[in-house]
Figure: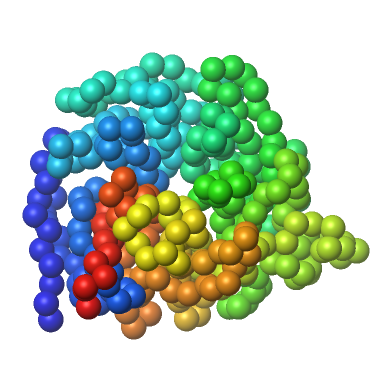
Length: 358
């Protein structure tokens, strides 16, 4: 079996052996190829600065990393579940569970930094679905989700929502509710509409309910949780006497328990035309299904805001019901290639396209 050996990047204060990953087991469409971009322990959410640096949050460590000048360095440490990262106007925002830090980012990071301030807006401290994915929208606001603090329950007024905040003020507006747990969202480059993934509840069997890809068309829409799942599945406990037609259904019902996380609209020029302004999302993979599924990237081709194709894009992290990698987030680089973080393998991959490739 051929394996690919990663060259060890310079990472201050970190010592670990180069890992071996069977990249040849990953299946991509014709013309696409995948390689290792960087080794980043526990790599989760990614954000990109205007000058092309990549910032990487983690969930299983206390660190945030920056990739600059071909090297991986610790950007900040001593944090608690710093999953979410977002960059804007020379500042990096890092989300812990209950709070968001603002860091001033120098032209070159030479040592771990301390935050400049903590934003005024706070969030619940519950660990259950508490880790954050954050991004700035076209309106300049920072979007912050608060997942349900349970597998399935009535969440009250703080949980199961997506907020947007003004980082320079104290505004905190609910834009969506009935959302069990989103760890990935983006904006349609054509319409500027908000789209997000959502993880379905557990313990309804192997094939129910589906994960979701959702489209917000009006501020304040309710997406059904905990009463309805997918397009019309009533929850056996909380869905009694509820009309699922009153809630906003998903645009795409994904497979059950795939743990759909990061998603992006592809806005680069490298990939074929069918990928333009369509969605690529990461399925982190099931944990409570008798036969595992997910552990792949999925492509959702859209036309006028409607799906015309949903299919696997990169598969092979799952082999004989055992996963050697788990994709988390995706990020489009300026050259049109695609980065993919993997918190199990501890790497970031880069996907490229060459029409002359095999």
